[in-house]
Image (cartoon, rainbow, N blue to C red):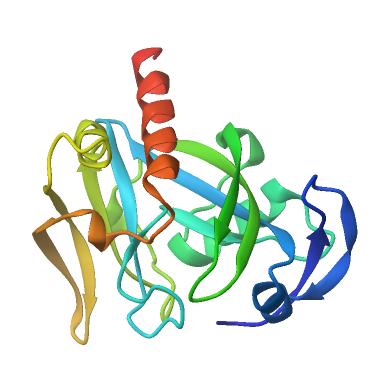
Length: 205
């Protein structure tokens, strides 16, 4: 986990000062992290495959793009930086649609207390055109939003995802069947809220 200085807050999101990210995760200090869920024109959600060598949640499916907000950095500014670093996407602030701010609480393997401003971005880009960040992102998969809703509301036990995965010889196409254990453990309620909100967005288009 790359260490860096981040802003620290109380439980009501009042700024208290700064600390190293490692300290925040050791002591459970509140801080901010950007979440962005990306949806394709045909209603598929992008799932990021975390790098196999990452200290936290290696080789698990994650939010399309996410990352910590640096000291004094506006959330959208940090978000645009993460999107460029992780996926090679060059976006503008008004490309991001705010969904909600989630309070993420995780007690192991680290103590994590995060305010997570959560955004949606609808893209025309294809996953095969992305430039994935080495050592951070090992792949990108697509899955129909309805399949994710059915999975996390326990209507089905497994879904099929399709995408690209990094290999020693470059990227290869991959299709596989997964269950909820393949995802980062943010809790069913978080995923339910995200996917239900995205579905409402699609329905109103």
